[in-house]
Each structure stands twice: as structure tokens, then as C-alpha cells.
Image (cartoon, rainbow, N blue to C red; front, top):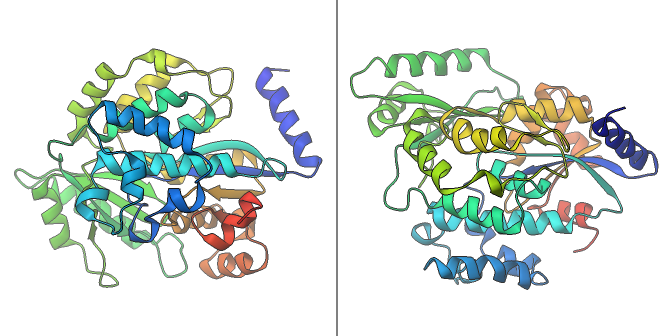
Length: 364
């Protein structure tokens, strides 16, 4: 029996002893908004050493401390959404939430994340140590501090029951193809995000897409503020710079299994650090991130009893639920199934939701 199999058996024994098997999901950019201001102070006043370590690193670089950002009296798009600030804030909130999960109740069997959440997942699993996590997240988050490269927009790919709408899928594929035939236009699939598709492109490509996609719910297509063209060929130079700035030596064998944005599993004793470095700082920077596939593999391969989504915020709750519905996990086949089940005994626990947070931590 391999070490992986032995550890899997140990995990199952833990579940049999009464613990719930949990898949933990780390959020990406765009989840620290007006409602999340003060999240660190509100929930993590007991983690001053952790927060101060991040702030000492940032002060050395001439960056604003996250304690100061989190403690502002008013939320500011200009201050809180740039990558160099948003990435550090989100990492700190998510990592601190992970520390608070009740290990007496939950056996964490696998971790994954959406987009920037992959960097956080590396930290959760121990593939990056505390210092390495600061370095990777702060470095990659600051890469476009001198100016964004391209942008992103989001568009629904589902019906009102949170099930895949094949007509919308075909439309998005058609628009991407048509826009890329226009001179000076670039448009790509950036993220498969549950019931949504995130597109990345240059300004000309995004403008063309906005003109071609029907308006839905008076919201979509929606531009994502202060987001570059993540997970697209437009970031080839960012990938090159990231690989130069961040050595392979930062990466370690993970202590928990991880599922990446292709649905590949990185095992606890069998991960190749060169390949992990290459995937993290090349492939996932310039190629589509399939969060839907990551979730499908996570639930099918590790059979969790519940899914815990780390804060801040709860913007990832819907896409996670949509992936669970697509895979009929927990018996859910529609938005109604999900909503009714959540009222009885939540199996999707969002730590950014105060009521559900208690379920994950056992403390207010």
C-alpha cells in the first residue's frame, strides 16, 4: 500500500470516528468588498503575530500594512482593490479562517481554490511555508501595480435553476471566436466558474464582447474592476517575471492533497517541485483556470461530507453550489434542492457568512 493510500485510509478512519470529511476552498480576487471591511479585526484579533509578520514584510517593500487597510473607516475602490493590496488582504483573511476551522469536528481531506485562491491553497496545504506564501502572493499580486494588462468580465452560463445552459455556452464560444477575428482584438476564456464564464482580453476585445453579448439581469456582461487579463496569453510577460522572481526552493511537498485549475491532484508525497513551480507561475497564469473541474475532481475523488469556503465574503458560494449541482453532489440537482437542503443542515459552509461561520469554527 502506498503512503497516499495509507493516509487516505487514515482520513477515512477519522471520518468513521465522527469527524466530517471537508473539502476546503480558497477564494480569489474580488471577495474583499465594502461589507468585508474590518474582517481581520472582527474575527482575527487573536492572530496579531500572523498579521504583523505580513505587515513587516510589506513595510520592508514600502507597502501599506494590511492591518491599516482593514482598519480604514471607509472602503475605497482606489485603496482596497489594487492587486498589491487586495491579494494580501484576501490571503490573510482566508488563511486566518483556515486556522479557525474546528479540527475536532472536521477532517480536512483536500484543498483547492479559485484563481488567486490557488496560491492560497498552496499555503493551506503547506506547499508554501508562511514566508513563501507572503512572497508568492505579494509578488504576483503586485506585478501590475504600474498598470493593468487587459481586463476581465463575467457572464452567466446557466439557467434560473443553476444548471448549465447549452445555448449560453454556445453563444460565449461564438462571441470569443468572432471577436478574435476582428483586427486588434483579443478575447479568451479566463475562468470556468461554476455557472459563470469569466472572459479575459484587451480593451478592444472586451468592448467587442460587451457589444455582442445580450444584457442579462441588468448586470451582465459585468466588467471586473481592477482585474487584469488573468489566465490568458496576454500575461506571458507576467509569467516570465514571476518565474524569475520566485525560485523553486520556495515550494515544498504539500501536507494535504491539492486540486489545481486543471483538475490535477497534487499528492502529499508524490509532487514534483519543478512541475509545481512551472504550473503555478506559468501554466495557470497564461491558460484558462477551470475551477468547475477542480471542484468536480475534489468531490469525486475525495468524497467530502461538506465543503467549507473560506472568507472573506461569500461571492464564491454561488459558483461552488453550482459545481455541486452540476455533479449532483449531496443529491442536489437544482438551485431549489440546494436552498432547501441548506435550510436543514448546511453542507456548503461559507465562513464569510456569520451564521455559517459558527458551524465551521464552533465559536462566534
